[in-house]
Image (tube, helix red, strand yellow):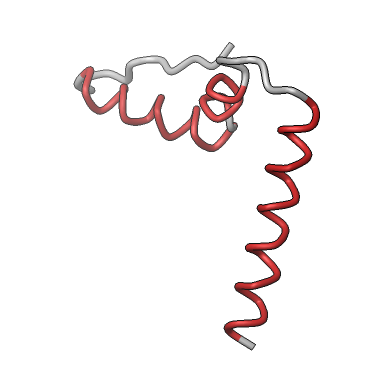
Length: 63
């Protein structure tokens, strides 16, 4: 469980910003969004392949 403690004199907004950064760094929100709906294995494979293709295309374009 990710936790952020308020420092002395720190505003809640600032602590919330630190919490969001920490969650982003850990990849927690990305994982929650990924598990929001069930994804069939074939869809997951298709998505991974599309990502790999775009990565290759980007390397070729900038090379």
